[in-house]
Amino acid sequence: MQNDAHEPESPRTAEGGEPIGPEGLTVGRAASLVGVSVKTLHHWDAIGLVRPSDRTWAGYRVYSGDDVARIHRVLVYRELGLPLAEIGRILEDPDTRARDHLRRQRSELVERISRLQRMVDAVDRMLEASRTGMRLTPEQQVDIFGADWQPAWVEEAEERWGESAEWAQYAERAAEMTPEDWKGIAVTTEALHADLARAYGAGVAPGSEAANALAERHRALISTYFDCTHAMQACIGRLYVREPGYAEYYDAIAPGLTVWLRDIIFANAGTHGVDPESATWE
Image (cartoon, rainbow, N blue to C red):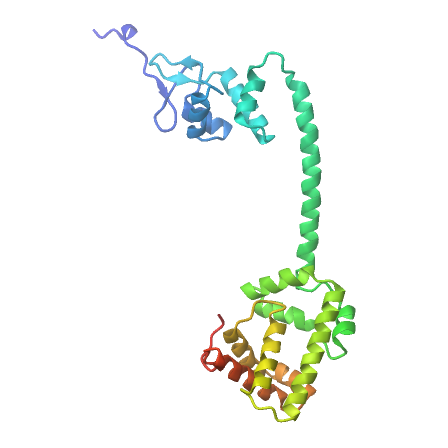
Protein backbone atom coordinates (compact mmCIF):
# COMPACT_ATOMS: atom_id res chain seq x y z
CA MET A 1 0.00 0.00 0.00
CA GLN A 2 1.36 3.37 -1.01
CA ASN A 3 2.16 5.64 1.93
CA ASP A 4 1.60 9.24 0.76
CA ALA A 5 2.67 10.59 4.14
CA HIS A 6 6.28 9.74 3.38
CA GLU A 7 6.33 11.36 -0.07
CA PRO A 8 7.14 15.05 -0.47
CA GLU A 9 4.27 17.23 -1.57
CA SER A 10 4.62 18.37 -5.19
CA PRO A 11 5.60 22.04 -5.25
CA ARG A 12 3.15 24.58 -6.65
CA THR A 13 4.33 26.23 -9.86
CA ALA A 14 4.12 29.74 -11.22
CA GLU A 15 3.59 30.68 -14.83
CA GLY A 16 6.47 29.16 -16.80
CA GLY A 17 6.72 26.20 -14.41
CA GLU A 18 8.72 27.90 -11.66
CA PRO A 19 8.04 26.46 -8.22
CA ILE A 20 6.48 28.71 -5.59
CA GLY A 21 7.45 28.31 -1.97
CA PRO A 22 4.67 28.31 0.58
CA GLU A 23 5.80 31.69 1.95
CA GLY A 24 7.59 33.38 -0.89
CA LEU A 25 7.78 34.27 -4.55
CA THR A 26 10.14 32.90 -7.15
CA VAL A 27 12.21 35.43 -9.07
CA GLY A 28 9.86 35.21 -12.03
CA ARG A 29 6.75 35.87 -9.98
CA ALA A 30 8.46 38.63 -7.99
CA ALA A 31 9.61 40.34 -11.19
CA SER A 32 6.09 40.14 -12.61
CA LEU A 33 4.58 41.48 -9.40
CA VAL A 34 6.79 44.58 -9.10
CA GLY A 35 7.13 45.27 -12.83
CA VAL A 36 10.84 44.70 -13.43
CA SER A 37 12.71 42.10 -15.44
CA VAL A 38 14.10 38.87 -14.05
CA LYS A 39 17.51 40.08 -15.26
CA THR A 40 17.14 43.17 -13.05
CA LEU A 41 16.37 41.10 -9.96
CA HIS A 42 19.31 38.81 -10.71
CA HIS A 43 21.56 41.88 -10.96
CA TRP A 44 20.27 43.32 -7.70
CA ASP A 45 20.86 39.93 -6.07
CA ALA A 46 24.41 39.79 -7.45
CA ILE A 47 25.34 43.23 -6.08
CA GLY A 48 23.64 42.58 -2.74
CA LEU A 49 20.95 45.22 -3.16
CA VAL A 50 17.98 42.84 -2.80
CA ARG A 51 18.61 39.17 -2.13
CA PRO A 52 15.88 36.54 -1.79
CA SER A 53 16.04 35.47 1.81
CA ASP A 54 13.92 32.30 1.82
CA ARG A 55 14.06 28.93 0.13
CA THR A 56 11.51 26.34 -0.86
CA TRP A 57 11.78 22.78 0.41
CA ALA A 58 13.46 21.96 -2.93
CA GLY A 59 16.11 24.61 -2.44
CA TYR A 60 14.74 27.31 -4.73
CA ARG A 61 15.49 30.81 -3.46
CA VAL A 62 12.33 32.88 -3.06
CA TYR A 63 11.47 36.42 -2.03
CA SER A 64 9.71 36.95 1.27
CA GLY A 65 7.23 39.71 1.98
CA ASP A 66 10.03 41.83 3.46
CA ASP A 67 12.15 41.23 0.36
CA VAL A 68 9.34 42.44 -1.90
CA ALA A 69 8.89 45.53 0.32
CA ARG A 70 12.61 46.23 -0.09
CA ILE A 71 12.27 45.91 -3.87
CA HIS A 72 9.52 48.53 -3.80
CA ARG A 73 11.74 50.88 -1.78
CA VAL A 74 14.52 50.41 -4.33
CA LEU A 75 12.08 51.26 -7.11
CA VAL A 76 11.01 54.45 -5.34
CA TYR A 77 14.58 55.62 -4.84
CA ARG A 78 15.52 54.66 -8.40
CA GLU A 79 12.59 56.68 -9.72
CA LEU A 80 14.01 59.63 -7.79
CA GLY A 81 17.18 59.28 -9.81
CA LEU A 82 19.45 57.84 -7.14
CA PRO A 83 22.22 55.44 -8.25
CA LEU A 84 21.99 51.87 -7.00
CA ALA A 85 25.11 52.23 -4.84
CA GLU A 86 23.55 55.15 -2.95
CA ILE A 87 20.25 53.30 -2.63
CA GLY A 88 22.10 50.39 -1.07
CA ARG A 89 23.78 52.69 1.47
CA ILE A 90 20.44 54.28 2.39
CA LEU A 91 18.78 50.91 2.90
CA GLU A 92 21.65 49.49 4.97
CA ASP A 93 22.45 52.55 7.11
CA PRO A 94 20.58 52.20 10.42
CA ASP A 95 21.05 55.93 11.08
CA THR A 96 19.32 56.98 7.86
CA ARG A 97 16.00 58.66 8.54
CA ALA A 98 14.07 57.34 5.58
CA ARG A 99 11.13 59.70 6.08
CA ASP A 100 13.37 62.77 6.13
CA HIS A 101 15.14 61.57 3.02
CA LEU A 102 11.85 60.93 1.25
CA ARG A 103 10.57 64.38 2.21
CA ARG A 104 13.62 65.98 0.59
CA GLN A 105 13.20 63.82 -2.48
CA ARG A 106 9.51 64.69 -2.63
CA SER A 107 10.35 68.38 -2.59
CA GLU A 108 12.79 67.86 -5.46
CA LEU A 109 10.17 65.87 -7.36
CA VAL A 110 7.58 68.62 -6.96
CA GLU A 111 10.07 71.13 -8.36
CA ARG A 112 10.91 68.76 -11.21
CA ILE A 113 7.21 68.29 -11.99
CA SER A 114 6.75 72.06 -12.02
CA ARG A 115 9.72 72.49 -14.35
CA LEU A 116 8.48 69.74 -16.67
CA GLN A 117 5.00 71.27 -16.72
CA ARG A 118 6.50 74.59 -17.79
CA MET A 119 8.32 72.74 -20.56
CA VAL A 120 5.08 71.01 -21.61
CA ASP A 121 3.34 74.38 -21.73
CA ALA A 122 6.14 75.78 -23.90
CA VAL A 123 5.92 72.81 -26.27
CA ASP A 124 2.13 73.22 -26.46
CA ARG A 125 2.61 76.86 -27.43
CA MET A 126 5.13 75.86 -30.08
CA LEU A 127 2.78 73.19 -31.43
CA GLU A 128 -0.03 75.71 -31.66
CA ALA A 129 2.29 78.20 -33.30
CA SER A 130 3.51 75.63 -35.81
CA ARG A 131 0.08 74.18 -36.52
CA THR A 132 -0.11 76.26 -39.68
CA GLY A 133 3.60 76.98 -39.81
CA MET A 134 3.18 80.72 -39.33
CA ARG A 135 2.97 82.70 -36.09
CA LEU A 136 1.11 85.60 -37.67
CA THR A 137 -2.52 86.56 -37.58
CA PRO A 138 -4.26 86.83 -40.97
CA GLU A 139 -4.21 90.61 -40.55
CA GLN A 140 -0.46 90.59 -39.93
CA GLN A 141 0.09 88.36 -42.96
CA VAL A 142 -1.75 90.78 -45.25
CA ASP A 143 0.03 93.74 -43.68
CA ILE A 144 3.44 92.17 -44.28
CA PHE A 145 2.94 90.43 -47.62
CA GLY A 146 0.54 92.88 -49.22
CA ALA A 147 -3.13 93.06 -50.18
CA ASP A 148 -2.74 90.27 -52.74
CA TRP A 149 -1.72 87.80 -50.05
CA GLN A 150 -4.33 85.18 -49.14
CA PRO A 151 -3.93 83.78 -45.59
CA ALA A 152 -5.89 80.71 -46.73
CA TRP A 153 -2.90 79.76 -48.87
CA VAL A 154 -1.06 78.58 -45.76
CA GLU A 155 -3.87 76.22 -44.75
CA GLU A 156 -4.20 74.97 -48.32
CA ALA A 157 -0.48 74.27 -48.42
CA GLU A 158 -0.67 72.36 -45.15
CA GLU A 159 -3.55 70.24 -46.43
CA ARG A 160 -1.55 69.42 -49.52
CA TRP A 161 1.96 68.93 -48.14
CA GLY A 162 1.42 68.71 -44.39
CA GLU A 163 2.72 65.13 -44.17
CA SER A 164 5.97 65.87 -46.02
CA ALA A 165 9.41 66.26 -44.47
CA GLU A 166 9.70 69.67 -46.15
CA TRP A 167 6.53 70.92 -44.47
CA ALA A 168 7.81 69.72 -41.11
CA GLN A 169 11.04 71.63 -41.72
CA TYR A 170 9.10 74.71 -42.78
CA ALA A 171 6.81 74.53 -39.74
CA GLU A 172 9.78 74.19 -37.39
CA ARG A 173 11.52 77.20 -38.91
CA ALA A 174 8.36 79.28 -39.19
CA ALA A 175 7.49 78.68 -35.54
CA GLU A 176 10.73 80.40 -34.55
CA MET A 177 10.24 83.45 -36.77
CA THR A 178 9.12 86.79 -35.42
CA PRO A 179 6.99 89.33 -37.32
CA GLU A 180 10.24 91.19 -38.04
CA ASP A 181 11.70 88.04 -39.59
CA TRP A 182 8.65 87.74 -41.84
CA LYS A 183 8.96 91.39 -42.83
CA GLY A 184 12.55 90.72 -43.87
CA ILE A 185 11.42 87.78 -46.00
CA ALA A 186 8.70 89.93 -47.55
CA VAL A 187 11.25 92.60 -48.49
CA THR A 188 13.54 89.96 -50.01
CA THR A 189 10.64 88.46 -51.95
CA GLU A 190 9.49 91.82 -53.27
CA ALA A 191 13.02 92.71 -54.40
CA LEU A 192 13.41 89.38 -56.18
CA HIS A 193 10.07 89.77 -57.95
CA ALA A 194 11.01 93.27 -59.09
CA ASP A 195 14.35 92.05 -60.43
CA LEU A 196 12.69 89.09 -62.16
CA ALA A 197 10.20 91.36 -63.87
CA ARG A 198 12.94 93.81 -64.87
CA ALA A 199 15.16 91.05 -66.30
CA TYR A 200 12.23 89.48 -68.15
CA GLY A 201 11.25 92.83 -69.61
CA ALA A 202 14.84 93.43 -70.70
CA GLY A 203 14.94 90.10 -72.55
CA VAL A 204 17.52 88.38 -70.33
CA ALA A 205 17.98 84.92 -71.81
CA PRO A 206 17.52 81.75 -69.73
CA GLY A 207 20.90 80.15 -69.13
CA SER A 208 22.75 83.45 -69.10
CA GLU A 209 24.85 84.42 -66.11
CA ALA A 210 22.30 87.04 -65.04
CA ALA A 211 19.38 84.59 -65.38
CA ASN A 212 21.22 81.87 -63.45
CA ALA A 213 21.93 84.34 -60.65
CA LEU A 214 18.21 85.16 -60.43
CA ALA A 215 17.35 81.45 -60.38
CA GLU A 216 19.76 80.95 -57.49
CA ARG A 217 18.17 83.85 -55.61
CA HIS A 218 14.80 82.18 -56.13
CA ARG A 219 16.16 78.87 -54.81
CA ALA A 220 17.68 80.67 -51.81
CA LEU A 221 14.30 82.23 -51.04
CA ILE A 222 12.60 78.82 -51.14
CA SER A 223 15.38 77.48 -48.92
CA THR A 224 14.34 79.99 -46.27
CA TYR A 225 11.43 77.64 -45.62
CA PHE A 226 13.00 74.24 -46.38
CA ASP A 227 16.21 72.98 -47.96
CA CYS A 228 15.59 73.20 -51.70
CA THR A 229 17.78 71.30 -54.17
CA HIS A 230 18.04 72.14 -57.88
CA ALA A 231 15.89 69.10 -58.66
CA MET A 232 13.22 70.25 -56.21
CA GLN A 233 13.36 73.76 -57.68
CA ALA A 234 12.79 72.30 -61.15
CA CYS A 235 9.70 70.50 -59.82
CA ILE A 236 8.50 73.82 -58.41
CA GLY A 237 9.07 75.47 -61.79
CA ARG A 238 6.87 72.86 -63.46
CA LEU A 239 4.24 73.44 -60.77
CA TYR A 240 4.22 77.19 -61.42
CA VAL A 241 3.24 76.69 -65.05
CA ARG A 242 0.89 73.75 -64.52
CA GLU A 243 -1.32 75.19 -61.78
CA PRO A 244 -3.40 78.31 -62.52
CA GLY A 245 -3.02 79.83 -59.06
CA TYR A 246 0.74 80.13 -59.37
CA ALA A 247 0.58 81.32 -62.98
CA GLU A 248 -1.89 84.05 -62.04
CA TYR A 249 0.34 85.14 -59.15
CA TYR A 250 3.51 85.55 -61.23
CA ASP A 251 1.78 86.83 -64.37
CA ALA A 252 0.21 89.54 -62.22
CA ILE A 253 3.75 90.78 -61.57
CA ALA A 254 4.50 90.81 -65.30
CA PRO A 255 2.46 89.06 -68.02
CA GLY A 256 4.33 85.97 -69.19
CA LEU A 257 6.69 85.96 -66.19
CA THR A 258 5.61 82.48 -65.03
CA VAL A 259 6.89 80.64 -68.11
CA TRP A 260 10.12 82.68 -68.19
CA LEU A 261 10.73 81.97 -64.49
CA ARG A 262 10.29 78.26 -65.15
CA ASP A 263 12.72 78.50 -68.08
CA ILE A 264 15.47 80.19 -66.08
CA ILE A 265 15.00 77.64 -63.28
CA PHE A 266 15.27 74.81 -65.84
CA ALA A 267 18.36 76.28 -67.49
CA ASN A 268 20.12 76.83 -64.16
CA ALA A 269 19.25 73.30 -63.02
CA GLY A 270 20.81 71.98 -66.22
CA THR A 271 24.10 73.67 -65.40
CA HIS A 272 24.10 71.68 -62.14
CA GLY A 273 23.59 68.33 -63.84
CA VAL A 274 19.82 68.13 -63.36
CA ASP A 275 17.46 67.21 -66.19
CA PRO A 276 14.58 69.58 -65.36
CA GLU A 277 12.01 67.68 -67.41
CA SER A 278 12.54 64.43 -65.50
CA ALA A 279 13.65 65.86 -62.14
CA THR A 280 12.02 64.34 -59.09
CA TRP A 281 11.43 65.72 -55.61
CA GLU A 282 14.71 64.86 -53.92
